[in-house]
Length: 428
Ligand code: ACO
Image (cartoon, rainbow, N blue to C red):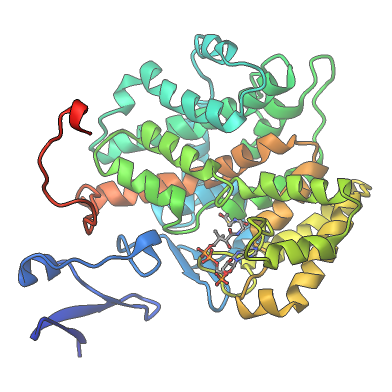
């Protein structure tokens, strides 16, 4: 039996359909609300109660700490799949066969270079520029070099745009890092896998031979998988809404990169390490910072804690915490920052302020620790997140286009001045 929701406005009742997802999530379908009521809308700042779409990509239950891509649990994917397989799964809906994966890999490799003139753009940026700004600019700039990627309507055109950006984005990310670090740009090695080739482009020193490191490769592969999608978060919603105007894939992704940059979203991984460093410099007194986080007159927040949808342990944080321990052990790294992180975590999990508000460590609390152990500079943490999130953004953009979703255009309740006469400047 299909359910209905009834609302009463100014004495009049309206019935609205209730829809149910495959995991029994319920939503009141308000598509007809405005026309039926003659103008009534809903209001929900921050979209805390608003579904923007129906999606078959990622299932997330924040209360129970569940995350699945296309029905597969994040725990199983992190353990058994590699990043490229997960990218294929997210974008096209099924795990690839051997042949499908080989074709995807070959098509991506055929596009794993950027026009030499992109170097001139990179050279124009100051060395100290934040890598996220550089990366979003370069992603937009790619359109100029690949104009056929702008208007993509058919599935074939979409596929071509997808393998193009999957090939070029790691190059842009690695080159952004090398520019930032004063290293000559590296062209990678097409005999290597997707993530390993990226590692080579990032880290190979000009006079050294590239040596594979399994610990680093496994840790990075896992991190990228864990970040690959997270349903309708801030950056993904941005990608979908920009793409809904039929702006192309690359510029929609560039907008997503900018949304990810903020410290309340992807920028949190950088903010976590900066916070831990500041606490260490200040003598390592975690209790002092716990008190600051709880003080409503103090703007300080415990970065890496809390999540809009997880009101339980972030399942990605659980996997990554284990991975962080392995990486630090295998690489023989002792980091004083880690002790501060452990101290904060323990205190927060026992503190009623955090317990009552269901504030648990999120994925970014630990990802920064791994990136740091791998020798990646703090400012590159969020670009690493962007590389991981790339397949999710692409999958969500493709779904939005294939579903022929209308242009995203929220409404508002106007609370400004009513009509008033213009005052000449001398009378103001
Ligand atoms: N430290 C201290 N208090 C916090 C924190 C925190 N990190 N996070 C939330 N709170 C408190 C708020 O002050 C609020 O308290 P109140 O009810 O007494 O007013 C309550 O918990 C609820 O917080 P909101 O801000 O309403 O929760 P919201 O869902 O809007 O925000 C967010 C979620 C932005 C992630 C928030 O928890 C935060 O700022 N965390 C730190 C930044 C961070 O780690 N971001 C990464 C998120 S993961 C990601 O994007 C990949």
